[in-house]
Length: 218
Image 1 (cartoon, one colour):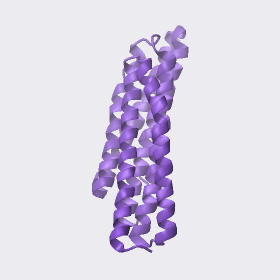
Image 2 (image 1 turned 30 degrees about the vertical axis):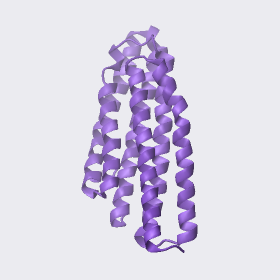
Image 3 (image 1 turned 60 degrees about the vertical axis):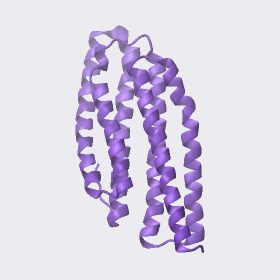
Image 4 (image 1 turned 135 degrees about the vertical axis):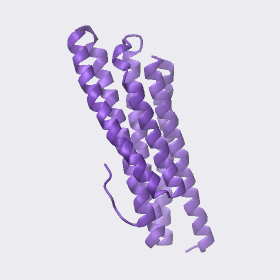
């Protein structure tokens, strides 16, 4: 077992890698949404190829966590730090996968999508991106109140998702020639809703890290 100072440094390294992974995921999500809104297949392909870096970092973080548990036998808050790191890493990886899903949808509709069905999705996307950023900010600063406040946005995302779903169904009924494209937008809205849920999971993880209490905020 290494000294306390070395252990603290290893825990900090773990946190920095998680933040680096979050940065990659946030960038991937931004580019994926931009590729959809601007009908840019090149940007969409960048998201798809860039997912390998996120997956590689996930493997590194997982190995760090296993090593720390095996060699340090952490207890109490130290163990919560590691367990929380694993859970946040898993949620980030799934967000990255959903960003790839959005990029693939964008590639399928590029050059074909009328603007009308896109009206609500950019607003929903901005809220989701805000949730991801604020969830990670809460993690950085161990900010329980910010974590709780961020989760309130999930209700707004859910409401927009329901409205978007209804609007897109109505649009397809009036414009059957766009069904192929609009179905992909329905999928994008669903991916965004799932990312918001993942961000809420991270907020719950932050609360557990700081307080030791498990709370369901979704």
